[in-house]
Length: 285
Ligand SMILES: [Zn+2]
Image (cartoon, rainbow, N blue to C red; front, top):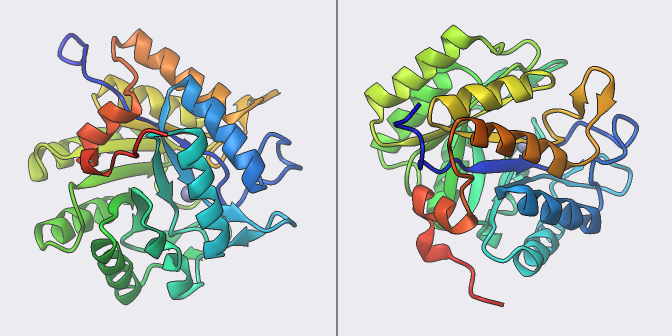
């Protein structure tokens, strides 16, 4: 573990997502005001990236660029320096609407590079849509966080990066524990890490687990020298009986694991340096 101490860990907070509702956990932030308040507390708990979807007033997922614009503006104002990452995955089947907010130039955007099953549907990412989303991110100088729901997605991310199709440094997230997709399996996780080290040496990676796997995958990632994601999008509970009181509570749990493994929690400035976003640092308010 000694080789990890002093190696800062980036904590990403996935605040809302497209699935959980207030009826699942009243702490899920829906309105822009709630999202900004929840993000602010998560940043104080250690988050340096805010991964965001937006919702309509009735809690259904939205692709409205105007909502994304307000959210970005408020996050930049209330949490200066924090890395704003928009989801382009929230509305499977919506086609290019999923990238309609990229012209707002968030620091980062999530990018899925292949398809897989989700709990009740196919998560469709056809090659032409993937190529278009990646090219929009190049156009607007947005660093993608590639979502790896499967080994093939990780290999595809590496190929796309080598081909110059992804803007900036390669950053891949392993997503484990989505029902009907890749489970949270330690041997698979270890192989993902080996694959990144062997085929994309020097590239940073992170990992997220869904539901009760969140804390498990947080610990695997922190122990293995990667970065990690927590938040109500992926998991609304602290344990089987207890709802998470906030996004901040889930980030705090990950921060406690960083302490256990001797890894400092990355500040937004450190996270920007690790991800190659320094030049995009927000001006002082
Ligand atoms: Zn998301």
